[in-house]
Image (cartoon, rainbow, N blue to C red; front, side):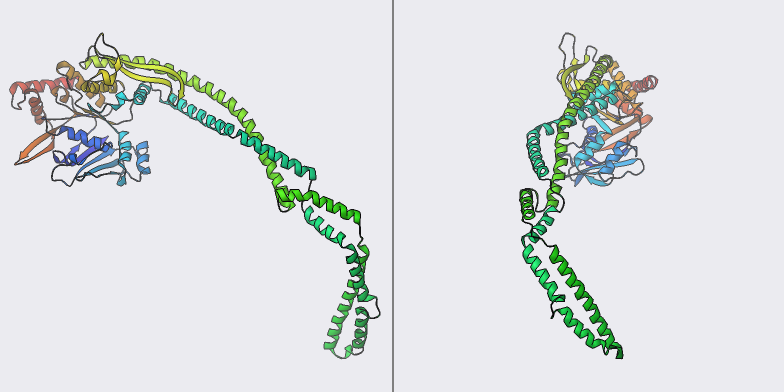
Length: 557
């Protein structure tokens, strides 16, 4: 609810502060005093477009500041936090500023925000019903929301909405898989061909490297054998072999090595060389004997390498990568086959989900139809007491076949304004003042079911008088038992029911006209009601009538 409202430089209002309490608050004053500027200020907080015309002449800007009591754990507080603003305890500060040049700025909880964000947050807290602010009565979606709120069908609506979203997800997945089917089939054929080609050759890890080395050895077997044997002979078998020459050197050193430790160490190193040469000669001879020219094996190796070459050319520079490609292809082929299985699963899931969704949507339709009958009856009864005795309100629910997030139903609010006339959409069958009263009747019927904490009615009593005006006041007071209600009114019968009474007072000083807000209590309130009744605050008959009205309101609240 709104705890305070501050206006600066707005139209005829230079500066004014309005402290608001729970219950019904009325705003009265002479025509042209500026009562509607209070409603206009709230509309600015709701994000309504504004021009420099709203800025008071001589003021640099017009500014509206509202302090609202908000649950810090509620959704509105979360949205403020998301926008970068903060609450001070339970208080949210909302500001809208319009410069004289026409530029507009907005702030929520101390953070600058786009005007649209300000409007979205405030619209969850405040609803304005004026003769030209009846969007909830003309928008089919909002009409359906009002019906669902009346029938307390929100949880079932959520189920239907979630089921519809799940169906959309399944259909999207199905479309994606079906749309890519030709690509998948072509890919699967290519993968199978490649895997068959690799399996036919059956390569092993590192085989290409081993075969390359073996072919090199077999192709040069004669040269390798001759070179190894010649080297072994040169090292150990010839009369002038290195081994024999080294033995002569060793014998010379052996004769004297015992005389000096340094020479003995060198001779020992020479001994090691001798052993190494002997071993090397033996290994060379062994290698030479092992090398065997095998033309048949060479041909087999060359044939195997020829079989591997196409694989290396297509799937990788070496067999490691060829085998890695094959492993990936196996996984991809499995995924492609899985897509076909998934399509079959999706078809079954869509069938089950559609059946479940339609069952819930049908249940919602039936409950909406029942709620529509009750809402039609209750609102029509309220309209009869609000100076529309011949009007009949009808909530028309028509079931379609096309699934939607809200179910299958198209909802329309219709009005038969007079006996014998046709039912028409409410915005065509009712005047502006009648629209306000229809909204009031709906709000009275739906009292206690809305999350909007503050309702504002601008001249909801237009075209009403006498006993009907008393009933308008009584119903506004009834609404005030559940929520904060702010009403701009010309009718004393309505004002008498207020829990709190403010008056917009206009004054003129020279060429300057200004309006201010005054809180009325006791005698001041009697004087204002007297003025509204008789046009004269001093009228004794008017005063008596005013006091009588206040007593009637006290009794009938």
